[in-house]
Length: 203
Image 1 (cartoon, rainbow, N blue to C red):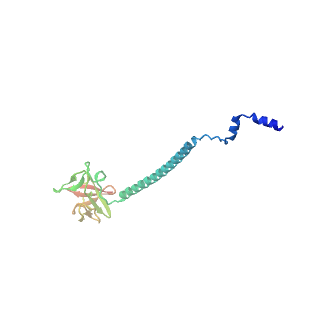
Image 2 (spheres, rainbow, N blue to C red; image 1 turned 90 degrees about the horizontal axis):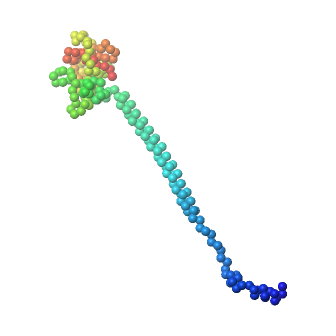
Image 3 (cartoon, helix red, strand yellow; image 1 turned 45 degrees about the horizontal axis):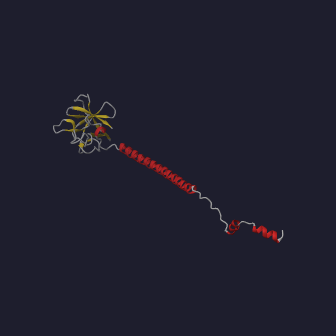
């Protein structure tokens, strides 16, 4: 190609192409990705939920262990209370109370009967008891069919107040001078009170 031909070729180029060549190159912008923030939020929420579930599981396990410890402690206290033979028995647990739950006591007219507590059916005083040969026998509120003239085996010689239990042989918490005899059934004695033999039993 000679100079003339080159000149003619250049002269045939459109002005628009020349202007476009002068402009700086424009890069296409990438479209923004709108789902990326949403994915981040979802991931954070998932981690938070996993943490909460783990914390609650640990808390529930701790509560369960604490509850089991409290239950064991309560059972131990009940066992200790049941093992104490000299504590006063009240209410329905009192084997020396009549059907109305009142404690057996000696009245002012010397008759042996049951009396109610002041404001409730709970017995406020220990049951009547006597100690013989190291064993404490408690009043069953039952009368024996033994003849009142039957020979006694001994007499109650000492007493403690009615709020206590006897602590030595021949002692009661309801008075002195009462005759006693060993009962026909094992673990029982009979005490002559008001002309009848009342049955006492070892607890």
